[in-house]
Length: 225
Ligand SMILES: [Zn+2]
Image (cartoon, rainbow, N blue to C red; front, side):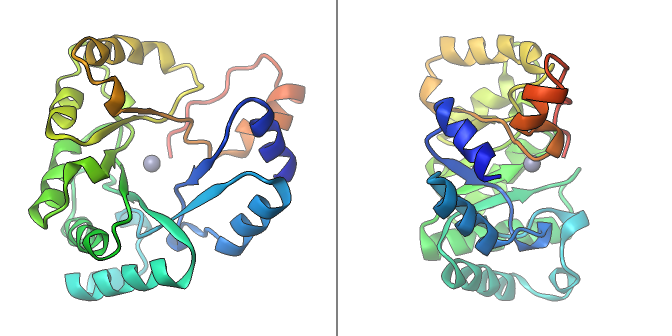
């Protein structure tokens, strides 16, 4: 992975935001060693991912307890963001509870928030819940909105208009060209500064040593985490 970081740096990547946290099996110490050995700055996230990944305690804890635990996560390690915080399909009762707690943890820590949606599903509802506890949209990025390929970009525009950021964050696969009309529609409406592009790198099949060698020229599967 140190080699991968050096390869990414050589191609112009100056910093990586890691979207993992403990319920996905993320090791903070691993990230720290990786950053120190490669020289690549890495921003570590914190939080709880989405319903299928929650630890069993989430169902038992109330909003205040989850808020307390989130703040403790951000103090235990050098955390730079609350994310990715997800809804797996339609927002569940527990996911709503976690989103409200994340909003409250944000108010206590001022760490920015970035989210996971199922290809854009429920994007506005996520922003609604965060705003309902007092989060300013300017501190939020709603993720995976490249999954909404409506050429008028109606949902993405609504999010930009409210002040939040829009993630076109699974770039580098065969789905890229389908997203171009929505991106152009957003640029035409003056929202360039609200668009965030990234790779959502998460699979071993995407490693540079795979794509540069044995998989040279092969189509890289679109990430569907
Ligand atoms: Zn995601």
